[in-house]
Length: 74
Image 1 (spheres, rainbow, N blue to C red):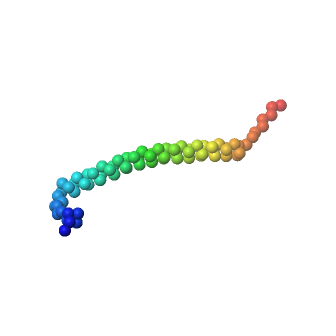
Image 2 (tube, rainbow, N blue to C red):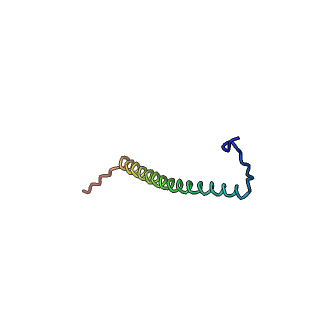
Image 3 (spheres, rainbow, N blue to C red):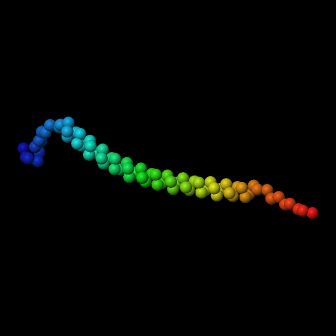
């Protein structure tokens, strides 16, 4: 048997598992925090766009449906 093919048997301890899970969790937390910040920014931009479009459409509709009243004084 060559040394490259030799399998080294090592017991996996509870501390090994805890360490690996903590390492994975910290990586996930960093990615989630980055994604959360981006999603908040995108949400604010989309919400602002929706408000501007609703305002513009409401203003246009108000102009089209408004009645012109002519008052004459004699």
